[in-house]
Length: 328
Image 1 (cartoon, one colour):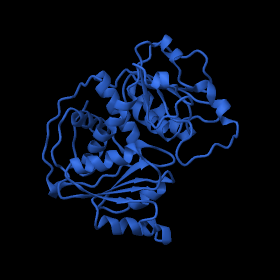
Image 2 (tube, one colour):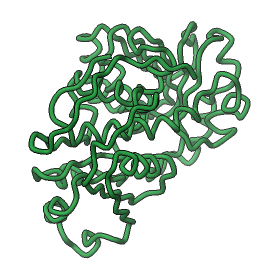
Image 3 (spheres, rainbow, N blue to C red):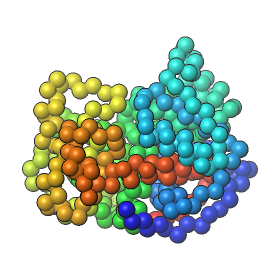
Image 4 (spheres, rainbow, N blue to C red):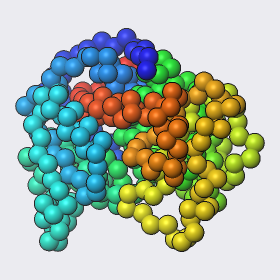
């Protein structure tokens, strides 16, 4: 994977000017915020570091299984100088009836940032964020996986040296990863994002409307179709995710038959020989993607997974930093 890193001027963080920012949705980010986080992720991947979170404490609260995201944020906090407290599904008093608002108020007196994976309603994350002392980061909710999209953009920037003008094909269920990706990519001029999703498993109507509106402003484009005929060629990237997303159950008992045509196979590279392959992992080999593709020369999925660390570092720094940033 080649790396092209924008020029970034490092600025020490003055604790007296430190602001509290939350990342519950990609919608929470301005264009400047989005570009800055992605650029910082690439800079961290290139070896830039420091200890901007020295003396701070990060809480990492995961209700669902996680290999990459939990490890990335824990490692990121430690590398940036913060201490870490880990919480599991049974560790907080929300299990005994304490409200999310009360929990957030209590934790905000002891933590500087809370990274949480609930796979549930993002309203709970908003409730935790209803205070002015502790940042809250959505490490995956049912509706959206914003930190995954930031990882994906960091991966694309490192691979191509740009995000503007890239052509991407997304295959499979339009889940929380696809939602975040659509909301993020359509901010970049010239990006062409095409989603091919099984019937009944497309983007939520509001997400598609928001992404389409953003694309009209930025000069990007987004198209969603529910079949595999007439696929675009000359793509820069082909992306899929596992079909059975954490915390969800398909209503159709025959859903695997409906999804089967959307499997990523080597044949897709006939019209796009230079495309890279992306997957947010874990992969169910032989289901949404063949091992031939996942382990093949086009795959950068495991480098993408490593980029979760660098993107997590950028997110934590942004949450606890003064205003400002860099552009791509």
